Image (cartoon, rainbow, N blue to C red; front, side):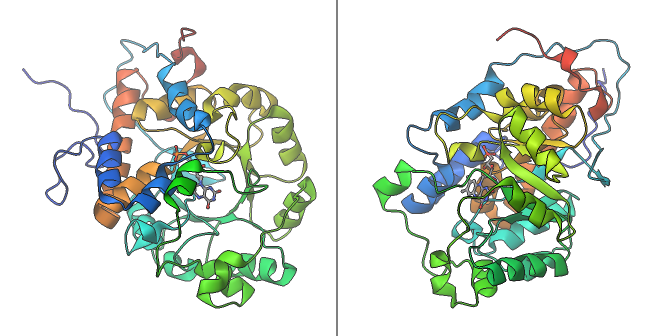
Length: 368
Ligand SMILES: Cc1cc2nc3c(=O)[nH]c(=O)nc-3n(C[C@H](O)[C@H](O)[C@H](O)COP(=O)(O)O)c2cc1C
């Protein structure tokens, strides 16, 4: 008897001799990474703010949702591609900005950017990255630059102009970091940045020696005017960290090209709603005028499918990339991406969807 073969565009479920064969899903990579990391980076990467309610809720929100798969739709192969901000993407997935990736692996953000580039997936580089934005650009993949506006106007402009000059295609303005959330795991273990790991993009922009970059202040008290200012620099602005419909509307009114629904991986306001639960009200308000990105708690292909059905255009992943990077550098990130892509391919096929556009709200059960 021969069963229809899954359409596996990238070898997620094939054995990979360069990888530990016992790691077969993103949770396995998390466990392996946490076993390998020193206590400081493990706390920094894994933790959330205060009681970590929002961190846990990000994952729990997906577990509460159930699918109503369609039968008999004649689906043999699945087309994962989609379009975001005028660019064709191979899948509705992108990599979120996460700071300080060289604490996970010496190749840091360059390894992540290379793994993403090989798969045509968009990589977001953090302002607080540990690799220079010019070096990351050598991966030659589609790339966005996540913006924390620096307090000094000259430094602020210098950083953004460097990103533009090095081919970053959009600015992702993070709006939920009025100040750094209180992350109690970090406090307990006395987290400090690993010696030899720096913030080169901040140092270059501010013109300070590498060790002084952590003291360069960010702009405080941002308002919607700052979105307008950023949009004038010419790149599309994605506003990241929106959880309310009125804020989504305001972001559009002030020039946002896309909205990233996110609670910053539960690292900022503990008690903030999960992105998945916040999404429907935002989707109702936005009415398809701009792409709606979502991040937080996505660990399975079915999570991606659920987010698509709830109204997301594309889904970002944060921590799972850090787990892959910790375990095996570029190859580990690649494996994490391939697993998720392959799981998404299965999720769509087994739900009777031939493509991403068929992932619609009627696939979600009202049951919680
Ligand atoms: C270790 C770590 C560092 C992060 N650094 C940044 C950052 O520099 N800028 C930013 O906008 N978001 C940052 N985030 C938030 C992510 O972009 C994203 O919103 C979140 O991680 C998504 O949730 P997930 O980790 O459950 O996938 C960080 C998250 C983590 C875990």
